Amino acid sequence: MAPIKHTDLYPTNQYRLRPMPDLKTILGPLTLKNPTILASGIMDEDAGSMHRMITSGAGAIVTKSIGLDPRPGYPNPTIVETPCGLLNAMGLPNPGITDFTHELDLLRNAPVPIIGSIYGKDPEEFSTLARHMERHHVAAVELNVSCPHAKHYGMEVGMDPQILSNITAAVTHTVHIPVYVKLSPNVTDIVILAQAAADAHADAIVAINTLKGMSIDLDVRRPILANRTGGYSGPAIKPIGVRCVYDISQHVSIPVIGVGGITTGADVLEYLMAGASAVQIGTAVYLRGPTVFSHITQEITDWLTTHHVARLSDLIGAAHP
Ligand SMILES: Cc1cc2nc3c(=O)[nH]c(=O)nc-3n(C[C@H](O)[C@H](O)[C@H](O)COP(=O)(O)O)c2cc1C
Image (cartoon, rainbow, N blue to C red; front, side):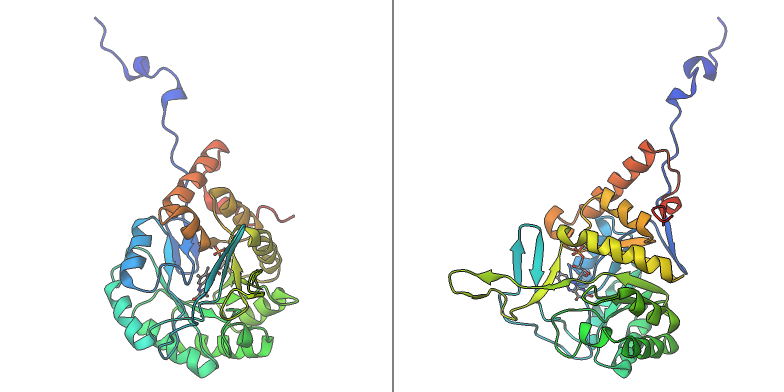
């Protein structure tokens, strides 16, 4: 009997396994194994919860926004669930940079990049915090100049292009790691702010933080949140985030990281086609659970396979003329 040849068993190409699509994405010196990043403020206030998000498949992690001193945050209620998203006014609760760096030390050998989010009231505070983060081995810092509900911080310092430029320049001169600037959509023209950050040598723009909103309790006829107003996140804000990323990526040459309302793999692809190089995911961790990262990654893989796209990075900016 003639020996069985490989070609007899597999006579056509139909049984050959197609290579898996490449989900890697590049943010300057950082390469992410997939484009999904945990957004700031969600399951990221201690090393244990961040580790859980890493094992759930996130390509990188952004920490809770950390300030110089401990902050208790606002009294309850701090979160309202609405039909299409969450309204929150946590008030930036955090342990302060000194205590938080112990958590960072526990993540020193993390298999994915850890990005340290910081907030401050002026360039000096931001620079001091960035230096602390760098000493404790974060891969990049993210400047929160966009929180809509913290007096003297966040959006209050991030809406003026000159102040934003001063803060960004101070930090980029202080540290040697990449500096990301997270912008607010609660402005007339987000592109002007993105250009101010890019001109001050930011390494990436993160868009968007939450939109300022309010919910009212009909029975007591008062706003539900103790802070009255809060930041709106979740599926309803996705078209706004996509529009911001599209506009920003047309006007700056640094990478844009998209965030706002991402819940599925299709949402990620929409942001990438708008011009994002990576995305962040927040509210969907509440909606789909911590395994959202591996589910979304699988959904992206399935789409790329069906559409014969070998590399995710080929889709970045595909929606631009
Ligand atoms: C409960 C909660 C806390 C948040 N805390 C922070 C924070 O500390 N710093 C920050 O920059 N953004 C914070 N955000 C905003 C998110 O990082 C993200 O920009 C926003 O929620 C939009 O993304 P999403 O629709 O995927 O949630 C918070 C959002 C939520 C819902």
